Image (cartoon, rainbow, N blue to C red; front, side):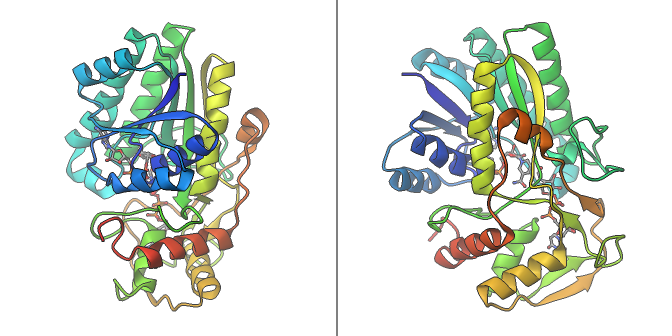
Length: 338
Ligand code: NAD
Ligand code: WQD
């Protein structure tokens, strides 16, 4: 039987997608260099699924190793999560981001081409919309980047568009995630950031569990309902399901298509703090501080295209997001490194 290859399968979104794929009966191979993850995540995934996957330590830029992998296994499609994702770090280390994300994707696609595996689901991001002028954002909105991380995602989208145009056998889905949060209901797998979290939800969770004293809310003078930034938070379990739908789609269609994976609903920073505190009955002290450079006021999706073509819609609620994030944080106060 052929397998689905996940690059970056041990990471936050990769591990939840691996679980969804195993539960749906797929054979799964994961490659990861563990630069931002721990193989404990996939051990837990296998326990939760009651089935095994094959997990290998490999860098997507290691062309000989990748080539050998494609020779050894029958791979029907690739879901490509591997990459670096910290916006601030990307401005300090642009070469590392272009090398990992852009050069890594080129290597992966070259190996796929040689192996005649031409179905690809790629982890893109709402960051490719830059500071969008109209909300909600449709896939046809203009694209731009405001930092090297975003630039790397935009470059990869262009590269994949050129690749699909060069050879009609390619079948590619660009999944533009909005703001992934939450964790599997078991509390066994979740987001485990290194050091101080950059993103809002892991920061709130670490404040609630007592690891950090308070949340800094980056600005309350945005043109939004309460002045704090508005985002489209999407539960990672819904997101994982979106990958299964995208895999079905690339089995049935050739060419390249972009899909927003979001709920279509925007919540402010203070909405998130309040929902977390109220639902979980735990205090989340915060203080309003200056805006974070590069942040935008609002960003939420028009998820209509994914609903129509992928038959995918987010189902889980804000309550699920804050409760599931908190369960993971409480059960694993130090992430995977107990
Ligand atoms: P993550 O860091 O948890 O997962 C990425 C995984 O890729 C990690 O396990 C890391 O070790 C691995 N990796 C990195 N470089 C590699 C390389 N050269 N070779 C092999 N493995 C490598 O991040 P995530 O949140 O799961 O994100 C997955 C993908 O989704 C990324 O491409 C990210 O840019 C994209 N994305 C994430 C978000 C988000 O907020 N989490 C939003 C939009 C898009
Ligand atoms: C959300 C809101 C902050 C932390 C980033 C990337 C994007 C995508 C998702 C990968 C904003 C506010 C945050 C804090 C705060 N990643 N905030 N205090 O910036 O929307 O998106 O992650 O593709 O590319 O840019 O997400 O979680 O950092 O911030 O007030 O300590 O929370 O200002 O309004 P963001 P985030």
